[in-house]
Length: 427
Image (cartoon, rainbow, N blue to C red; front, top):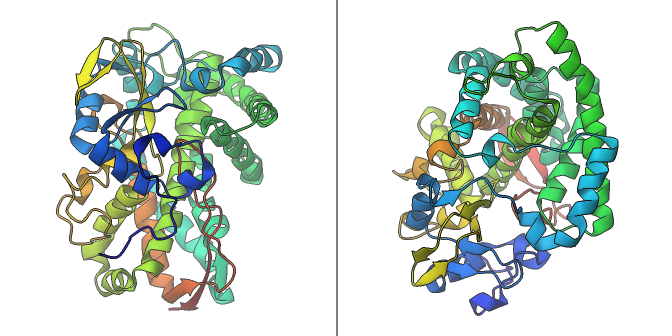
């Protein structure tokens, strides 16, 4: 059998794995396979996290919110860089707003009550209303460079498509989107836990800059509400709390669940989708032959194979036994979605991009259970229209010779191509 990861750093045993090593993060899939087969519940000697990699185990963790909590006094950063977190807290308090727990960092009943408010703001009708805007934006972006015959797919399409849409929903000015992208990039780098202390200070200061941009918007919308997503987030009272979100809570949501959750993850999937169709010419041919039949499964396969979110965290509320390993109460658990999405116990030939896959939509790329990704419906529409516009406007496509290193931004939790230079013929 051909090695599906010929250029990857492949550890020989679990204790050689270090997910904070940029070389392993560049292609983590051999490490995931090793863990699934030899150590499905693995205590990472570097971080102290208990890493879970098999599909059925992840499903159990995600659905059991009593044993596996989202609320935690100690964060993953405290375990990896605990010596510097007090400095970061002081920086927020001195210059901005200390971020409060996000929706993803809460358990029921607080999570359920807060989620109900978000469900109103992200109601299905609003997503349907956005669909023509998603379509129009996708075609406008491609039409801006289609006559050139080449582009950086990441910079010219994968980034601006979701960013423009979330910016529209959040009331951001078009000319401010590059600044917002810089802020979200800084936030994502801190999330990745692979920064020096100086770099982490820079990330916090960038987030504080973003806070001062959004605070006047919050103040204005409290005085004069409007029919927009951001106005709903500012003004909707959370049932059971008897209040709206505080400034600290709003600032957390603006970065984590709106601009990062609503743009960065879609960007990463759109970028990898293009890379996959070039690497798999038969997939391109199938998509071109019958878009209606295959685009939906293509979207699911892209998210499954190159999960924009590689893994997130839970907290053990009690001692838990799994595969002969005792996870002690209080332990930090890393649920590795991207490992589970290539589990051969659930997906046949999991490394293959299969447009005929019957269970493609059962991937965990958007999570599962009560914490299933709030923005999944919009993300799927962004990917659908992004890939459809690509198929409609390009007759053929290939990598630009000598211009790509296919490198990814070093990050423990997210997976993002730095750039993707392509050449194409116009349809």
